Image (tube, rainbow, N blue to C red; front, side, top):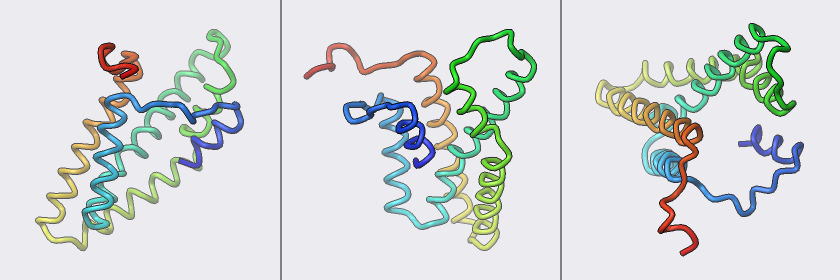
Length: 147
């Protein structure tokens, strides 16, 4: 969250009145419930897709930026986002986190590993829905807005 907050401050974004879109609320509620009511193994497995997907998207965008060069105009914020999530430092953090999750799983019972997998897969689905929501510019149904 501190990564996002630093961007908000740097780009003078005020998120005070921001509202969570449906899939964001669904995903974050699932994460909060899991990390607050389940053990650390399940919580760690739930958080992994977020880190991993951001790294993957960052790497893909970095490659695309290199291929396109100056053919495409981007605002500086996009380049900073790509540099951060596509960079070696973030990749190292994600790799370290994957190793921590693998270590926890290697010491867990078969039943616990199965629960970790279930949370990981659910969060992969929710992460996908989160990104789709942005691409589709999903909003709450209009009849529910401002009520």
